[in-house]
Image 1 (cartoon, rainbow, N blue to C red):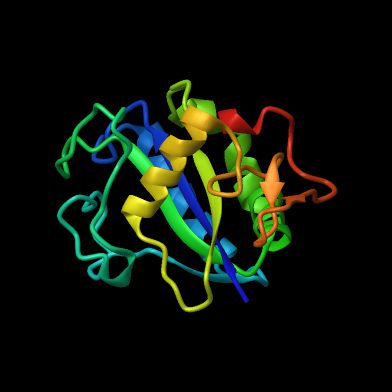
Image 2: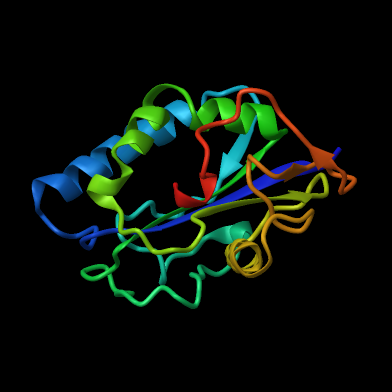
Length: 185
């Protein structure tokens, strides 16, 4: 049975290494949110660095998740001191569990504050696609799908909650999806 890959990408207002309270708050909340999301039914796993180092994205060993990559339009730093992005790559059993994890609890609270931490870029900041059972999505896959979504809109190749597709490529609706305008969060 296919699994659902989810790639998220946001440009932070300041680098992760910034000692300002707002940056520390985002990082601390993010750690708690990740712990909580990993407990949701339907969550299968997410890309994590071998060492788990904060800010170590570009140089890190991501194992089966592949070499770290970012969209071409990301123009901020790439060192531990200058990296100003937050990104995830995760694997789910289906859309409903992912929806429940994203739009409830701690993650929902964080979404409500996203503009405290993130720039508005005019690009989508998440994308879904289906992968065959046993396949681990990679960072370059996520970037490619996000850029495809930006250039072509939702399609079976790359889609959002609001315009989702089943593994066979047919449109798939789910009741109770998040707020309208899902391209902006």
